[in-house]
Length: 369
View 1 (cartoon, rainbow, N blue to C red):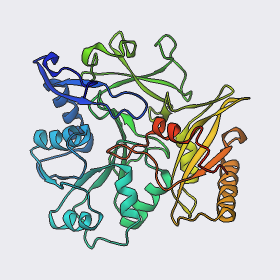
View 2 (cartoon, helix red, strand yellow; view 1 turned 135 degrees about the horizontal axis):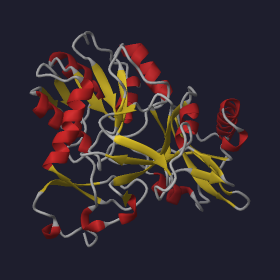
View 3 (cartoon, rainbow, N blue to C red; view 1 turned 90 degrees about the vertical axis):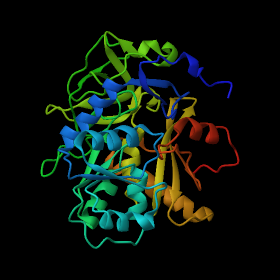
View 4 (spheres, rainbow, N blue to C red; view 1 turned 180 degrees about the vertical axis):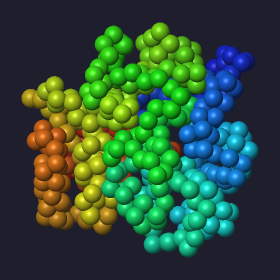
């Protein structure tokens, strides 16, 4: 690959080099030293109160920072044990959890959704303390359904390769975060500011999320994207706000935010509403070019039961717009709705919104509703 970095130039003191997922741009090389990896792993041990009696079930790929640091590193530090599955299997998941006496799992939202959509029910989950949802926001409706059906707490978390991988996490049960929150920062400082860290924003106002901690990188491989590093602070590229209790609420990646004539729209909040509809399997919300507003809201929908009947699709589109209009301001209602068979996703099932835009915008073969 001509675009690959020259590995001969990697500093020898580094523990690992791992690349970002590239959901909104070209992947960047993240150099993590042993101290950063240990500190991040120890934060997981502390926040989840892990001991030598804990056993984590690893179903995410090891080229992803979550499997490496959240699961493996925390087990090494706590003295616990691991169960590794080469590939996630919905049919094997609950039998492995039960037979191997797993106490916690770190899973992507896609895995949680797959488990919800299977008819397999476990018999005995007394050992399972919690499932940690990571890599992308989990829809509130899916979280509620999962906890109600399986009686297992889900801990939302917020992290990234550059930190690696925990920034904030829900408190352990019986404590819980406010609805829609990704938890509280744990052993890391957070500021909500503008893109240059010149103006800190008040509680409740969305802005760029900056972080600072001993587990956070201070540069990328080959010094890329230097504007993301200011006075020891790192700009995550995420947008969100803190409430008065210190809980963080994510609005999306800064490159993913939809700017409709100055009104900023988070794709996550619209997706959360659409996902509640019984006929929707999954949804992805993106910005679509508009001659008047600059950008407008578009929703890409995968139906639970696929159909190409235009009358049915028109009715589904009407229902989608109605539920969004009932819960959000009118400018957030999708102007365009597309029905597709799949949505571009990365290895951990994050939506690749840039790829999705490239697939849809200007493509006259895909019907708009």
